[in-house]
Amino acid sequence: MTMRHSARTPERLRVPLGACSLETGTRILSAFLTLLLLAAGADPIRGQEERPTGTIIGLVYDSTSSAPLANATVAIMGTSAMTESDEEGQFRLDQVPAGEHMVSFFHPRLGHLGVSGTHQRIVVTGRSISEVYLTVPSRETILVAWCSGESGAGDTSVGGTVTDALTGVPLPGASVRALGARVGVLQRRRVVEETHAENSGEFRICKLDSADDIMIQTSFGANEGIPVEIEGSGPRILDLTISISEPVTITGTVTDYATKGPVEGARVALAGTLFSEFTDSAGNFGFVGVPPGKQIIETNQLGYASRIDSLTVFSNEALGLEIALSTEAIVLDPIVVTGRRRERDVFTTTGTRFSGLTEAQVDSIAPRVLDFASLARAARMPGLSITERWMPDAFGNLQMGVCIEMQRSRSAGGANTCNMVEVRINDGPVPDPALFLLQLNPQDIRRFQIITPIEAGLLYGGRGSNGVLLLYTR
Image 1 (tube, rainbow, N blue to C red):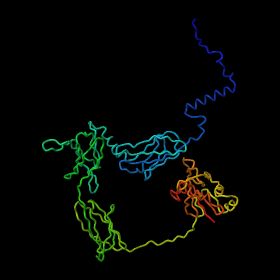
Image 2: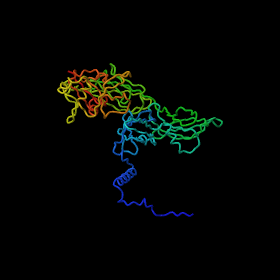
Image 3: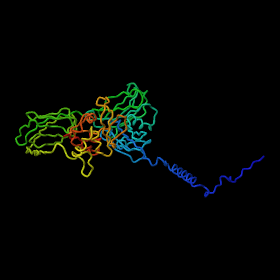
């Protein structure tokens, strides 16, 4: 039997829209809106909730100089979040949306080296602190990258700098030769490759064959450096030196310009170096082993005008100087004695809300409380949390204490973590504040004030990063 498929819609599905009940229509409209929100990437339920955020902290390190990299711009790719590393190479990014992110950095040194910095993929969860370690690639890595595009099939690359052994000054144009096995009757090493140092003194020779018994020889003019044998394969960094200059001896006498007599005890120093000396009873001084080049001599003595001289010295030279100082009237700044009270009435910036209890308020509340925690809660400061919990002391042992922290300075941690405010009593710091506050008699407090982390940072520096509690006793 042949069955035919009808193109007609079954009667049970052909329901006029006007025949739908109000409840059915509402369900259809709700489902339709939900589909539209999902298609747009929004969650109709969670869209009204605040997206959780976390914090990213880290370090930017320059592997080529083995030191932290300051003033590097650290950014989260695909967002506008960025910051700069401090003098210690450290950085911090707050309010980072939860999720997976790519963290990278930028610095002019990367352009100088012709490389890009490392980047790291990291997952941020709500109220968490994630650590990131970013680096400038090592010199070996940079050498491999530079040589990757060079021709040849060798397994060894050599790179580095050529400088003067005494002054450390780069030697641009210095010849660097890779010498192979000895050949011929005279058994001289054949030149496998030769290059010249750049203006910065840097050089590189790529893809040498380690089976060739390689030796690196450098020269600058008629001066040659000590040959260096290359053992094994892979990238090698060699910082080569050539002795092209000889040390200088500088001696001299400091005299009085008017009397021509010697000046004893004058300090003579070469600016920017460790060479510094006081003149003897005859006004004499002397420096041995000074690098050749331009030197700045600073001479100071009480009662005389300071003097700065500039001179250029050449290799293997001995100089004798006579430095005359003219007298100068000694003008001392007046001594200013400022008297002030031991404590200030208010530390809060003018125009902002005072947080704490005045003496009158403490007098009215103290008789009704048994501990300081209850007294502090009476201040009703927004964002302030006051709890009693077990916390580690200075030796890591758990002890009961009063934890006072501000919500804006909280970070993720264990159950015993407390970002304790700095506690100061009569303007002096308290060593173990959590235990101290637990045992503190509220009847001894005359008044107290709580300073937010922003203002506390201006007044107390790093110690006020979590806020400060100022206590004044009766």
